[in-house]
Length: 151
Image (tube, rainbow, N blue to C red):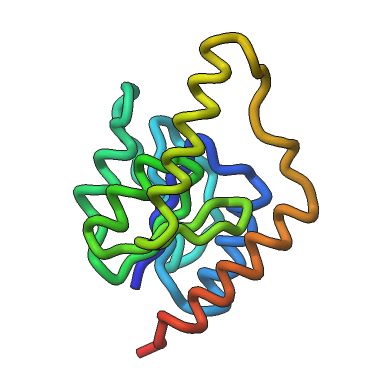
């Protein structure tokens, strides 16, 4: 198992949770972004820099992910692609996308986008605070406990 991170939009606090988990649980964490990101010195943390452009990081993650990998992303279409490949996807707010729920998340995302485009709704998600960090850390720990064995 490896953890891939759609890192351009991943909150710093979520990355910190991932960095701590990588060393503690000895699981590889790879950040994929279109810019250099500072990472701690660890044999379990690395980063991949991709060219700037629409969905370039997403496409790189999809190309590299294996069926038993986890992808951390708030991008629901990317989560859908990962699940189609047999992987798993976890939102930085602690929502685990599954084959059973990803279509519902896609429909809600599309509906919110239509409402924003029509001017009926403005703004994005709520602020990312301690509650969200804790929910993410808990969901991540549950997932890794269930799916990762240290060899």
